[in-house]
Length: 261
Image 1 (cartoon, rainbow, N blue to C red):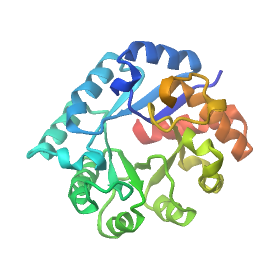
Image 2: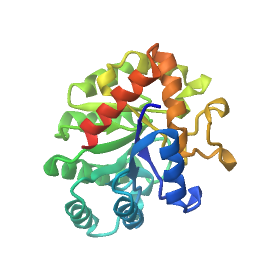
Image 3: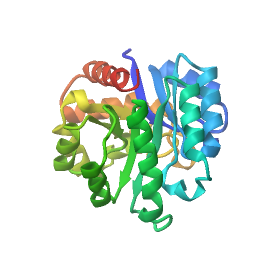
Image 4: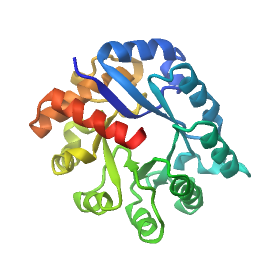
């Protein structure tokens, strides 16, 4: 059974039931050996830190503020984020970014929160996980004006092949979510068919972005996504790319370690 590495999930999310040890045991049984657990707001940071401390052989922490929660950023959050990174030498920055799908907070409110995290990642030479949804114009303006870290991940990348090729040139990788196995996401799957294998990682985004029912080896109520669904997501992508399952697992885990250490 090949090893699989999850580039992005929210294992601390209370919707998963609070039994992190049980979830990790199921993941290990399925072949998932390493995961990045992403905070989405400052109130999550301590929970993600505890998971990383309790399961250092599996969990890499990521601390950040998601664009949906940009309005929750309290004065001094940048200094507290820098302190969390200093306390966790293997941590990355994120999930952060820009989201034009939601009406509030506005892009104008999201932008300074994103820029602060981008600059911190670049200055501290930490990997960065970026969320971008229906905000490509604003994001590409940032690309033109800001220095990016050497390694950054476009989480659940749904942009065009043209954008992907532009970002590869400055150090981007792209994570494939099981949600992209839905037939209505065929255009996104086609983009991944044209990406170089060295720039592809896998993610669950658990408990969100579940794959189609036929690809859920570990179904949960309310169509939530179990993090142990990752190998099935990998099998789906391997079939789409026309490569072997084990070859994809080996390549994406190597990419995970290159990105997150």
